[in-house]
Length: 311
Image (spheres, rainbow, N blue to C red):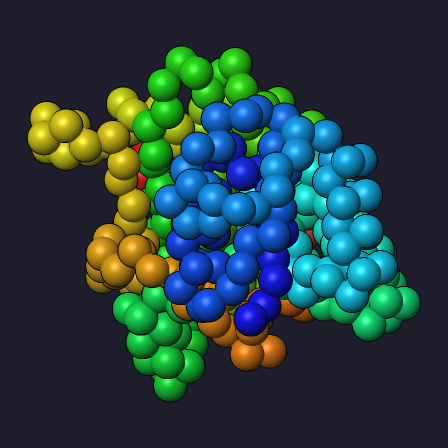
């Protein structure tokens, strides 16, 4: 039985980690969160120790380690800016780290974690669940058999209420902004499909909209990210939808709206089997998101402008 600890136990994504740990036959030993609304853990691991202070949490896990009862993995589901120090905590404790996206906020932090891996002999993994989505895996196999540059239009609108502006997610220093907090999975998906980006443009960067253009080894991509539900197409809005996800490949819509239920569990299974997504897989999306965060926006030419920018 693999032994786990989990940070961010009170967060939105924590139940997916608890379910995954249970379904892979693991045991949650301890959890950490400054908030105490963590009753969800009773449905999974009611005996797990709980801490609101990271110092006490780390000391408890260190004591367990000294008794030969340490954790094998520290799962990290805390706010984005805490991932880097908590990954280092995991490695100090002699545990592997399995972090939510984004793994870290800056490419330089990826490099430093590679040094920590070499020093400790432990691995750093991340949750890139779109890479285990069956429809997307099939699409990648299809693309690998085809040649030439592809034209891609990527659109992701996920409506957020007024609370978002008051949360850590709206603080770019903590979340990395929309490109990182909302877009990191899609930048990773593009890199997984089409290789590295050698041209990055930012056309709009506001608190609610990021848009731009990427030229990758195998694709030209016009992309648009937003938390403003008014960008959801009108027929979907009238049906009460606040989310719109679209990837058009050479004008052909790619459908992958279903099949998300058990992706965290599959990521856990792959990680425990030694096939998880590590620093090398995470690096390119982190680099692109950091460029989007720091580049000056420019007016787009018509051929690289996302269709939604006309609105």
